[in-house]
Length: 172
Image (cartoon, rainbow, N blue to C red):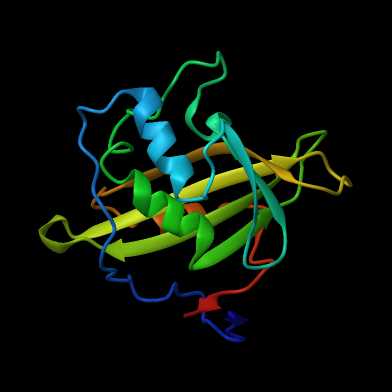
């Protein structure tokens, strides 16, 4: 069970060092990478419903890894190598932020985590899910990725106008 930490002071929890998370090779195809990612959600199919730490239902499917034209982006940037860390982010995020839909736009949920990854330093993970304002039911995946960028990538994301730390900061 997780519990919200009342006064985070606006600071994210310290990056986590976790054992046993496999780094994937860039030699895998898009379909192989997606199949491996789906196994983290105990799914042998193309989609799964996952209930997050707050009780919200998330649709886990290829939409997390495709662009607006439906083409794979699962190997874009550092996504392939750190793919399984992004699964940990969805299952056990440091923070979940809500952005209410603007001018007809969808409501969005942002799952954010930071990990220590040895000599590579800091890994920031972001997953985004959305649904129409006022709707209930499962949230659809928009994107899912990780980055080892040197700047404080998540701090910039967290300071976006319109974001609200809706579901707290999670204590492990």
